Image (tube, rainbow, N blue to C red; front, side, top):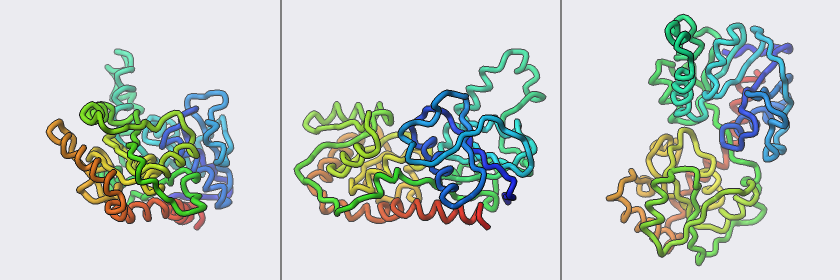
Length: 329
């Protein structure tokens, strides 16, 4: 149980100049704690950079701090990509926020490989990584059902896990008028940074379809594009609850996805199984047939995505309520 006093500093660690789902969640956290009038909330960027806060996140109120004091009253919030910090601050209370679970092992293995031969010889004595040890002042937040399953598999009991999920960019929550689709718009949206191999095979196998990458746009531009589109396709790894999947459904896009990472769990991607595919070459004709069916019969399909949309639109409220429960007792 976190102990918050009037002297506590809440310090949120974050990579600098990074515009992806995880860093946005960390800035949202700082902003929401400010809104809840929680005192002494700071961002701390690692590695240190000038202008570390991306312009895209200027909508979130944050204050930066450079020096970290290891003190029992302080609360350090650490993304899973930075768990090497856990043992650097033995006195402070620490929260690991599992935003993208696959990166934990990838980055930890990378850091271990970078150790010198001498360090590796004495690694057990000099081990600074976090390996799910039972430490008294380390707490766990799961951003997705998938991440909660992951940390439970590593010995963390239910009663030590809080479910804390971020929310989509506020731009997507400000629909001033009903979304009216142009049913003749048959363009298919996708994120070119995710599922590259799978998407490339789908594009190659469907020369009659128009595929549009969602890239080099700010949140408002992405919202406008999604508002006009019927379908978003995603075959990425999805190590946490993916932002673009949630953004697309908020704008009444149907979704066709893979079953990687959190997408495999209905609790994280709350769409019927008929829209999820385990990707292999033999499945490509079935996937393309489903894509064409959605594009041709959008009004029949879109009601199946209403439960997911409802969940996504309520995430900011759920986030705020959880933070109140943890920090404003």
